[in-house]
Image (cartoon, rainbow, N blue to C red; front, side):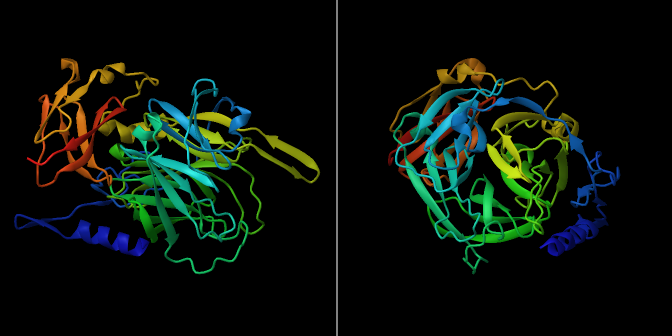
Length: 433
């Protein structure tokens, strides 16, 4: 796969003809932080190399004992939320300033075999029951749950079942296969898995549709992370993914529990390994079974780890579940500045003015009107059908949205309006004209 990507980029750089005149693009490393940065480069070919880097972390606090199995972390509904990987059905909101649990949302009619990650799009949370340490599961699946239904406690739940296209051996091999997974992201039309590979200590991307049903996860690209990937956070507006994990030796089957991050950015389309790939190691004195990572601004990252207890050579180790914070401004701000991100990103705020928005009528024929304060004009909106497909988008320059009968036949839809990272959803019904 890497050969074909590289060949395509070289061809693209060397053979571009415009208006009858040929000119050569310069392929290479475009990241000024890399050791092989070339200032005349015009096309990033994913070749950037970086010096070995160790980062500092700030410990926020120890998590409530109820969260000893914290396996995921994500930013939603203006806060950070986690979920235990076993025997639980509740979301827990964590105060990012002191690690206390401030809210609980329990979801009826779900159970967890090994729930290792929750990702999201505008309408849904996706609960990944895909932990597979023994490599023998035949019931890997993701629960798609409407955000609106969680908040109003009606719980609209669908199942996305999957299997790996290249797994043929389902013999139980504890911590010895490459078909475990604890990290994934959701795009406009697909789910991308990042595997936790015990045998090779690499990670492979597999893709599958994000619609309910039974699917075959298609193998895409592989990258050597030299460890175990356990979590991912995704900011599509910045072409940025940050993976977290911890060290592991497949030869001796021992982990030093030294966490690391892998930054993936400036990639092409959804080929996440085609751009910059930078590993950041925690200090050697930091030991934890890191499980999850999340951010609300692309600069400040919050990380949770599970409670871990073991004995090595007669010496007991007891590592409690904790919340840590990592400041990545030095590594990402030069890249993110092109998107308008500045070093003055504020802490989480409650942007309540978005609650003043109303829509009417409902049901609607061909025009939906927006009742909102004047200062909220210009907000972004998207309209999705109930399969999660985007059918319209734009900015609220006027206080109405025209509905196209060709892309939006009669049926049920959801209008999504965004303001300062806060999302408000409005289900509505479109009638025939």
